Length: 435
Image (cartoon, rainbow, N blue to C red; front, side, top):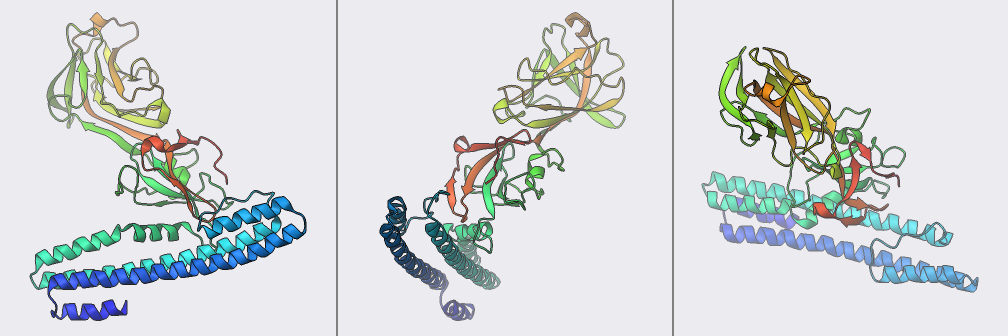
């Protein structure tokens, strides 16, 4: 990076013109990046050669001892190393002890080389980022705003460069000993926030596993938000943990009309104020047969991604009503969420209904209901005044975006939701994730 520093001094003094300065600055960085890559290749090639020599000696030992299967397994290891394969095929517990020991030494050395490479690359990128920041500042102060914007664009491109992002992620995943710290990258259904899941103190994946925020990769590489949870149990709302709920629907009835909700046999009227709080008047019309309100698709998780949720509905029952006194809640059609509820006559009530996915349908229906035994003719013309409706996911489902091997190598990445395997449903792991 010394060349870069000397070059930038000249740039900031104003000697070269902008176009040449930025081009040469980027070229210098690229050259330094190539040198780092060359160092990696040299070290891994040397390590691979040494490992193959040790394996050849081990193969001869097994051949001389008439251990055919062991000799063949070592021969397979030599082939994989010579082809540059990584990760190497996992060894079974029945593999020869000499090969297991040799593999451990090789893996530890290989991971250390990758760590050194990642550290060098990240250090170089961080220095380049500071140089570009200074460059942009100088151009801005000199009034060359267009050029400053171009430098800023290059600065952002550097931050999302695959090689740099990959190096940062690798360093996060790998422990000082060379073993994996992370087991999975998970996506939480509903808000699509992704986290790295680390092993717990017993070397397993459990609700006690620490988690870490990452930039999401599902759909597109874009930051979609962060969690404040520190453990997997909190992230998924597991029993015994302080859960982190998130809102998927939040509506205030502060203007005429029900959009985006859809009503059947219910007329929306004016917005009125009662006891200092405003609400929309909803009236069951005189020809009503099945008065209800339907929320948009996606407001409740379907049963294939079973999740726990909480509905908070604030409303008021007018004193003038004959029979209507509350609501009945259903997921989709015909899947009741608890018993019918009753509000407070003439007073606002903030009603909470908690439930779990019951249906393949992903929407909520609300039915204005009368007292037990009421007929449809009895409730026509009655009203309810609604203030707000909110739905929160309390125990979400989760899916695996990426899994990592014992040496922090990626075992596969899925950036499409349809390809991701289920990890947890309704605050419970779908299977034992211990490794």
